[in-house]
Image (cartoon, rainbow, N blue to C red; front, side):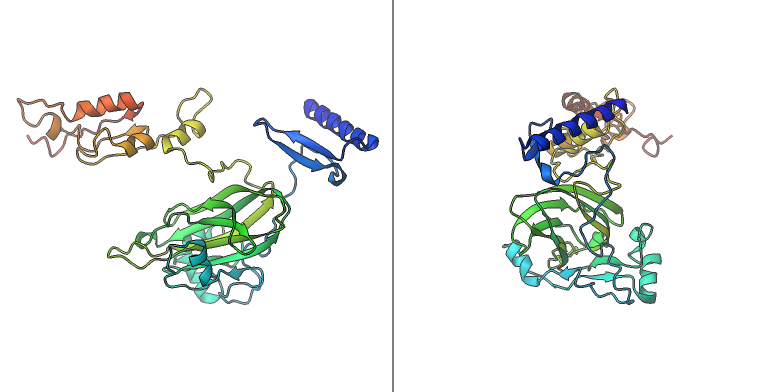
Length: 355
């Protein structure tokens, strides 16, 4: 407490002194990574260690206005993404089944949607009556224009996905911060493919010099159905969308995953360990039968915990009273040692061991 007060006091004295001497017009705050932020002294009101109040730049972030019991997209705060935008932004894409995005929640049908329909996954955190919706099996999107100044911003969105069993999240599907005309990308927040699970997505973006207006955009693409139904767009629901300067309140403890491309095992090793470096979360793979082999590149790259499905069962190791066969199990043990993996042996004795 005393140390923080002393630091604030010295910083204030420095700034006031610089202004009084008219020696500088800017102050530079240097970070540990060697970069620095520049601030105009004339624009600084005060310095504090207290967390500032959130300032969400989005209008109608929960899709609540107007409360007219309709599912219409609430213009002018939210606008539909034009069909032609998709083929311009994704040159190789041919638009399939375009439909204007909307919201859901109005009237009796809206109540049923949240109590027993596809809206159950987001109902517990719904802040009002409505949520934004990108429809199932349709190319659609919505956006809002936001006035900005250059600097760091944070995105925070409550998202739920439904009916993903017959659809897929396409590559590069993400919440986007674009130029006003939608042609330049300043930042994206990837949308993970998780069915009927409520997520709070958080990410950061830096708006470059010279940019005064951006598009906060939610969109997805739909493709023609294949024999197993893959390719169609899932149902996406959004609520309490936030676009804040520096940070959004309530996200201080979230890990920003928007720029993480490292394997799963490295993410766990960096973010899910105790003070002594011991794992607090194991996340692994259970390869079926005897394959994939212990040398499977993807398995070894992504997972630090393995449970081979069949290699340690009695039918492999001790198929009859006079035979012991370690040819299936030993390679897994050696591979686990080589790749620094925890190996759990799955060797049940049941119907494979008749009396």
